[in-house]
Structure formats: structure tokens, C-alpha cells
Image (cartoon, rainbow, N blue to C red; front, side):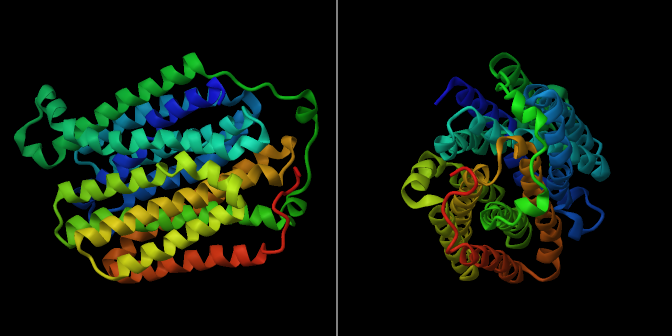
Length: 402
């Protein structure tokens, strides 16, 4: 792989530390700060809403100013947002913490473009491998994010936070450490990444109307697999810490282990998902993702002991990887070079818009109806991807670029 892909993988490892930390701590902090229990997962939803709202404008900025400048802007926003989140927790301000989460979502929206930058650095035939390698950076983030909570008390002690702030002081320190990691993201991008050259012809051609683009059934599959895959993952993952710890009474250590294992399972398959695309094709990988989701739901429906959560969340992570990598690698086959930013922005808005709705509704569903109902709602997203696969059963494997 080119050096650019390795640089983006390292940047991904640092920048995406935001997500697992927020997934692990957002619902727990929210449950102590929120004015009512149904709003406990609102901070997690806010980070997803921030991502969904930012993807299209950030992609347009990249089209105008180049990817590097916007990558640096996203890193700077994450630094400010991390410090703001720490301050909001310290002041026990739920609104301030949610506002910081929104801004962290903007940083994630920018970091999500790393995979497309990696695809542009390689031949189209290696798009799946490039995207998979960048996602491998999430393995580091999966470990590092929740681990910041372990070192949070030391930071709190160093700052001299009073003991009466004990329920929150661990997270105050964790988000301060997150700010330091985000500084590392800016350094890596600033010193290591270079914009890819854009052909002059690409800058002068407008591309086809959206209606014509979406007459391609493979584009629907690419967007739908990523969007529904992300939505179900977010829906279940956001609710898991709340249901495990606050409802079922599992320890914070066990909850942390399940979430860390899940996030590792999200990114570890990237070691071979590019190879699977070469062997099975994009639809084959997406079908494997759907299969993993079905088994995940069957296990989760069978009980709420620790091993049920662990196995279900492991399969949830694997299914997400196959659906997301499959959809991402399929997307470049559905547009021309001059259409890339427009189609990518629509794809990202669909993906993170669906994720935002899922994360925002997750806390309400778990509080009003419980874990079992949440799982049956999740099953509807699997059905949606199955419908897209069925609709594309006769479509050619390659899209426009073939």
C-alpha cells in the first residue's frame, strides 16, 4: 500500500478514539446528568447527529479547498470539543456536554473521509483493500478510547478535583486525555498527508443529475448496505451500556469489556475483508454481513447474561464491518471521478443520518419498551438490506467503472 494509506490509517487510529470513548461513557455520564432517564443516551445521539449534519458541508469544503485543509480543521474541532466535554462534565452541565458531543461529531464526519482519501490513492481494483486498511486504525481506537477512562482518575487527582465530584471526575480526566490524542491527529495529517492530484478535466465537468445516478441499482445497494449496517450497529451499541449497567446491573468492568470487544470486532475483520471482496464480490461480503446480523439477533434474543451480550456484540461488530466495507468498496464503481464528492456526500449523509436516528431513538426505546423490543426493531434493518440484495440479484457486479 502507498505511504498515504498508512498515514491515513494512523490518523484513523487517533481520530476515531473519540467514538469508543463516547459510546462507553456517553450513556453512563448521561444517566447521571440528564434531567430524565429517557435522555440518558442523548450525548451519544448528539455525536451522531453532529456527524450527520456535518458530512455534506465538510465534503463540499474538501471539494473546494482540498482534503488536507479540512482534515486539519476537523482535528482542531475535535481538540476544542474534547476540552469542552471535560468542562461540561466537571460543571455537571448536561446541555454543555451534549453541545460538545455535537462538535465531536463534526470531527468524526471529517475523519470518516479518510477511507475515501485512501481509495483515491490506489487503483480502483484495490479500493476494498485500501478502505479495509484504514478501518484497521479503529483497532487501536477500540482499545484506546475506553482505556482513557482507566487513566482518568490520575488526571483528576493531578487537577485536584474534589471528592464530591467522584462520579464524574474519572470522565473529566478521560476527555482531557482525548484532547491530547486529537492533537496527535493534527500532527500526523499536517506532517504526513498530501492531497492527491485532481485531473483538470474533473474540475470542469459537472457530472450527471442525481436522478440518473440513482437509476443504478448498485448505488442503492452500496448506500443501503452502509446505512442500514451503521443504523443497526448504532441502535444496539448505544443501548447496550445502558441496558447492561443501569438496567441489568452488570459491572462497569464487564460493560467496558463488552464494548471494547465489540469495537475490536468492528475493525479486526478489515485484515481480510478486502480479500473476501476479491473472492466473493461485493454482494457476497454484504451477504456475510447480513448473516452475522441475523445470528447476533438470535443470540441477543435468547438472554441477557454477560455471554449473551458479548457474543451478540461481537457478531454485531463483524456484521457492521462486512456491510460497511462492502458498501464503501462498491460505491466508487457507481460514479465517475467528477461525481465523487457529490455521491460521497450523499452516501455519508444517508449513512450518518440513519445512524443519528438510530442513536437518538435507542435510549427512548430501551426505557419505554425494553431490550427485546429494541432487538425486533433492529431486525427490520436486516430485512431492508435483504430486500436490496434481492433487488440486485441480477445486476452486474461492476457498475459504471467496468
